Amino acid sequence: MTLASLHAAKGLEWDAVFLVGLSEGLMPISLAETPEAIAEEKRLLYVGITRARERLHVSRAVVRSAWGQPQYPPPSRFLDEIPDELLDWERTAATGRGAGPVTTSRAPAVATLAAPP
Image 1 (tube, rainbow, N blue to C red):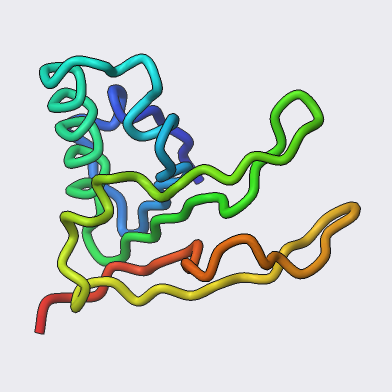
Image 2 (cartoon, helix red, strand yellow; image 1 turned 30 degrees about the horizontal axis):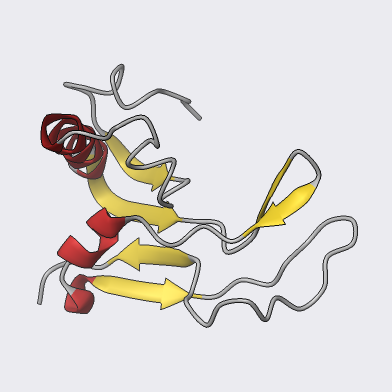
């Protein structure tokens, strides 16, 4: 397994790529406030997406903990730009200490990018 930042992944490829954290505030990062900064974040995500030769898995948290408090970040706005027919979303069960049913969002949290028809 190789762990790489989107910046470091430029020019590299893998059979399977996992992009995690596709929530507003993480991708695009909350510091990206100008149209130029948002465009740069989108370019970085494009780099990550195009590193996958065979399989691309994207995920986001439905619930996150920050400073001991639950947060419910919306999905990244960039996910709306991926055609629905290319995504196969699957909601996964919560795990870990104190995990229970998540009822705050009906949106799934993990997707696999399918090959174009």
